[in-house]
Length: 134
Image (cartoon, rainbow, N blue to C red; front, side, top):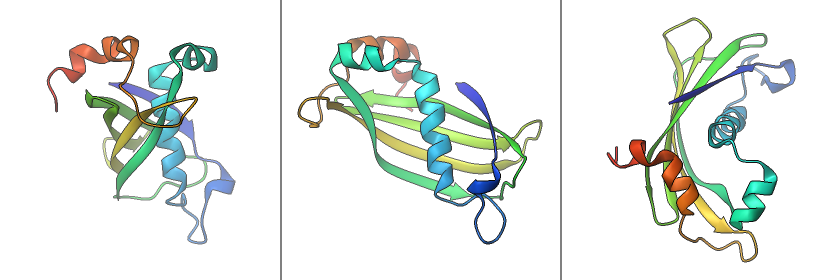
């Protein structure tokens, strides 16, 4: 599991003065990028990149300007070109969930933008977690 801290900014609010639902996808993407920890150069070496293919989000409680959020993510399974990643978002220092989510990410070739098998370097980094298949 990996957690990053993000501070809610004023321009991320909607008309109801809480985080716009679409902004949560950016939070999830940021957590996934930080968790993998690859640079742009490393992606170039591997010849591809992850793109989000499917996202399911449950909005449980709103966040507002100034909140510091803990975005936790982990890889549930990897198979072929797909990786399933799960997420939880909470206010810093609180146990109550604001958001839960599950995303399917697909590894695509940088040259063709078509799905291809996830490189072994990535699978190896997550293998102890993904071998359980949850």
